[in-house]
Every structure is written in C-alpha cells, then in structure tokens.
Length: 313
Ligand SMILES: [Fe+2]
Image (cartoon, rainbow, N blue to C red):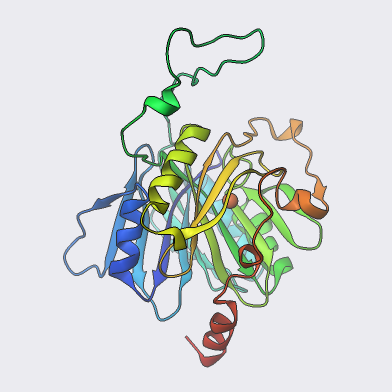
C-alpha cells in the first residue's frame, strides 16, 4: 500500500564505546548484541530497535531503513530506482539501494506499521482553561528518566542536493513536505512532517538524528539531565522549528553527531491537505528560540570530514 515509517538508522563512529554510552545516557535502551556483530544496537520505547552504532574511520550515516506494507510497494520502489538508473538490490522482503551523492544505503523493508499507544494530553493551564487543579504540573513532578518513544527523522548534508532529493522522492517514494530556499528539502515516508531532511553541504555527512518524547517538559528534562556533568554536549535549544512545528533541543554525541529531542511535530494524514512551502530566511531554521550557534550549520569537524572524505573511505 505504501511506505509508512522510518524504521532505523545505522551510524558509523570512530569511538564506538564512548558514543554507545552517550546514547544510553540519552535514554535509548541498549540491546544485547549478537555475538560477533561488531555493533551496538539500541531500542526506543515504542519503535523497537532503531539505532545501531558501528565502527567507521569517520562519523557518518551508514544506512537507513524505511518500512513498507507489502511486496507491491517493493516492486514500485525497484521500478522507480531502475528508471533513475540506480541499481536495486533485492532480497525476499526488502530492496536496498545506495544514494549516489552521500553513499548512504537505503533499505525499504516490509515491516508492521508502528502503532504507538495513546498517551493522554499533558494538562496545561491557560486563560479560561484550567485543566489541572489543586496539583503541581506533571512536568515538575516527574522523576523517571526520559526515554525517547521513537526515531523521528535523520538529517544529512549532501554535496549534490538535487541528486539526493531525486533519490528519496522519485526513487524510494518519499513525499515532499517543505523546502528551505536553495538549501534543503524536508521529505516524509510516514505521517510525520519529515523523516529525512537533505541539506546542501560542502561534504556529505550526518547532521542529526531526532527522537520523539512525550511533550516539551520531557525535552527540557532530558536535555538538562544530559548536560548535568557534560556542558560540552549542548548545541542548541530550547526552541520551536517552523518546518514541522516541533519543539527541539539539540545535543552532540562524542563522535560529533547531533541528536535532537523533539515533541509536537506536524502530522500529515491527508497528502491533499498539505501544501509544501519554500521557507525563506530564519523560518527555514526555526520559529523561536535562542539564535542558532554557527556550529549548528557548520559543525566544528566539517573541515576534518572534508579532508577525511578526500583521503578515501
Ligand atoms: Fe530535527
């Protein structure tokens, strides 16, 4: 019937053990590795195993996996990739292709749909709207560690935005949600506003992965806990994006990849009712929040990644 979810990502890092500790602190649950698999896998509360770390010389997005309903979906993906002249590697229940500009492997696999349990809205008081009486806010009473519910999206820098866009939109079958004028494309393979954002960059690299939490309080609690003994992890937040409308706070793992806690993202259920816009100026980046640090757009290791990329794999 259709693509329906971003199932998982594989991230390559040069410092596996240290980075694995970071994602455990971030609230992902380590999964017992299979003997000899050479990686570290992590689960989210609702999404199952969604992150695998592997060792690579330079940090990078190695692979992403998209969920589809059935073999007809896989057939359509294969046909579209073939029309673009991109080889599609077929397995019984999946199709895999390499995105030509970034080298990221994209797999579309037949996967059950993600059915997240309904969580009642957090009561917030407002003018003429008292939802919570005689009690402190849940956000100040919560004591349990923050645990991301699912992987939301991945953002990659690409040296050839047109090629990367064509691969995801015309090849894999993503839908365009919005554009950043001359700089990027927000694309979805689910009802989330974006599951992949491709950004123009001088070198192909992983910008960030983003992880859903229940509400804005969980973003704040999660980030504060991450920063407690590690102020160097802070990148940018708290704020609200314009594209996707989500609240955000970005942190940095020890390999240099950003990871985002997000909540309240726009959901597109009827494609006919969403009109993609081209966002100009600051709106492409955010709606409100502190000014983004220069290292958000140009991570500090970008020059090193460029040198490394030119030196070979
Ligand atoms: Fe994001």
